[in-house]
Length: 246
Length: 267
Image (cartoon, rainbow over all chains, first blue to last red):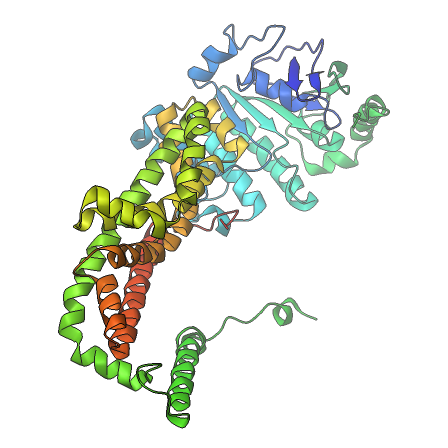
């Protein structure tokens, strides 16, 4: 994947090859500027690859996008400030043309993300963590097969983040979607994932693939185990020296 | 120190009324009293600077005349406001969807902006006659440009991630416009409309100076030439109240339509 910039073309990704199984939770881990967000945007057909091929359940990303296979959660919640919580969650259905049927679904999802009772609240009335929950509910409302998350908890404080991680695992287990999760936190990646892919800096390529052999359902107490430490240490070693060039 | 001690306490309702209504009114009252006192103390002749009490009396005595003229100016100002802003909004929408058009027409808009309104008024009277048309066009011209600039900015002030979201949702151009660009432009649009209220009244009055037999502008000219300074001041005050009322109407409309707090408040 090559971008043309004012300073000439920049190769963001090269030789990044991966396969993700249905219902799998895979994290992409790497320093900023390693192309993990680019990879996520290629999968979602927000960007088109200059080279290479992506297949989503046997379909090209553009076909999958039009079939509404994806839910996308951005780093900032990207809620529309003039819409209430419920209206924000209903947005994907409105665009798909079936908002009326989806109201019950939307309320159920707000229940799932723990925001029942906040349907009428506007984004400015919600905390950062709550906004991200709304964004997750919005991404899930189309019942996507694949949930793409671009550092969704990167802007949250650590206490909220830890709580949101647990919530996400619960939601993932309840909905059974495939999740591709971008992060630059090794503990977060280990805690959440079935598999972690470490991307090296520009151009991004897969440096390490690590299966996380920790039992599920996972509890924050798992972070105090030797196994957890061993996994994060392996990721840390792979990341060492991978500082993105400015 | 506790958090409660740091956070400013919510003012009681009665104090809010004092702060928001009584204090500004007291400022204006003080100004009028000082004016009245000055004209009396220094015996300023009425034809130079009439006292506020005289202006008020004139306003009451001449009200039938003023009322006949204020309606005309109001129609011209509102007509120009609707025309100028409507055209500016449509042009902004066109600009945002076709950058080529923007490149061609933006300099034209700037050129129109640079023409002094007072200079163009006689030309428009020549072209459009003595009726409503030249006044409406001048009021429209004067409110057109700020709205165009703000609306273009507002329509473009959409977060990149919001556009990516619309892409993932496979939204079409119409949906992106109505569900994203238009609502996010409203705070920008209203900050321009608020400027346009006062300027469209000014535009109508200036246009009436050039060629007219009714309207506040006409009345101002007549009062000046006949040295009826009380009437001149009274008419000016009415023009100012007209603009103020117009402004408040737009503010109310904004309150009804823009009920969220914009993340980046427009300038």
